[in-house]
Length: 586
Image (tube, rainbow, N blue to C red; front, side, top):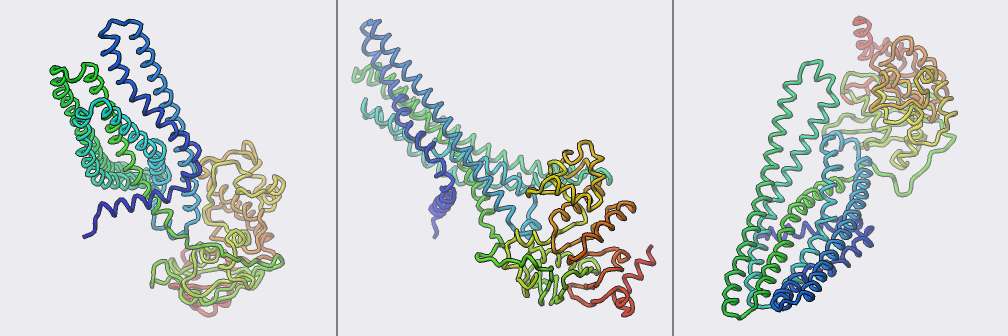
């Protein structure tokens, strides 16, 4: 039979090893904090000895000067202990926060490098939970938890040493109870870990529902779903609270049992030591010192119980974080990348491409076509025919299952993603804006000057709209561009593409959200932009693509028709049918 305890310990050690590179960056802070441990432990352990000396010496003899001197020493040890404790706590918190920052940055870098397929199956709320509360819980392990355990263990050893130095038989009465406490902590460790994992999972679900409802609040209100969605949220919230209550119960039960054991130990010292005092085998001062030591021995033990909860929370968070870090990055840059010819014209070739989002469920089936440089091609077909999938594969958001895609004769898998996506300009149906000003939303972090941004905006006929904003190009954009209309956001997407001067343009019904007047302006700009560029258009309104060079017609992932508008109408195939239906509908 497999020893589950040893398996769990091995798993914990493996998890900790994953975090060692981050801990090593804070070696200096951790070393100073550890160097303070002996000073902290000794200053705490010396107090009862001084009290014992005061009672049995100057206190019995009426030596006021001696009492004052011992009181001064006792006060000095308290000041040293509190000062060192505060300094150590500051160092550990600083180290923990720095580690938390590095881990969160590494996690963010990894998440943003994952393929689109990962985000299609993972709720955003789950990722937010892991990037925030899980990372914070992990920081506690390294700030107060890990070194705190070493500190508490050092205090226990030093206090126990002083106790055995004073009186071995009394020390045994107290220290023998450490063994049942250890067994208790090990038992609680397993059940608390499992309960805390359920809490984290429920928190992810809760955040997912919250994020979904906040982003879709307009739909919620329009369809009067406030009550239904509130009930759904309340149900998940109650489940989360029940999971939290379970961890609170285990935490409280552990604290209560450890408190009871510590009281039993002190009672044992009073019973056994009191008898020895009456027999005059030990002094009263020694008994008082032992009571003090019993309290100071069990204080770090109680703290260990409290740290135990944060450490188990940290291990749970660490498991969840490493699950994401272990998720493979499916779309990677090649080790020895090729480069596109700067003089390339933008030829696109799909060579017998097969692709499925799930194994053996192909969305594209043996798609094979070539788009010569400078040609404008429209993708047409019913919903689910594979139009958007072709665009995603071209931009290398996914990898083909079979076949290959080339640009100017170079397999796109042999290009870095940065070079590929600089070569391709994409304008989606809905423009997404980030927090920042208008200029930064057009430049998107690249070093384009204001003059370059303005020139691109003028070319796309959007400069006048931008200058009408309160601060022009410096106008701040709120979250997701909520202070701009849908058409205005789309206009900025055209300026984004123009400033990069791409060889290939991809348009996903990019003018759908524009009014008629604005669409005319943008169409004029597009006619300029398309000169000497290859363009691929996903078309839903067939009336907008009559003048393109070629039309590729897809059905159920297969390319079934290829030709110009009039040619396809003359064939009287699927394209002619779709076109006729749209003409009748209009």
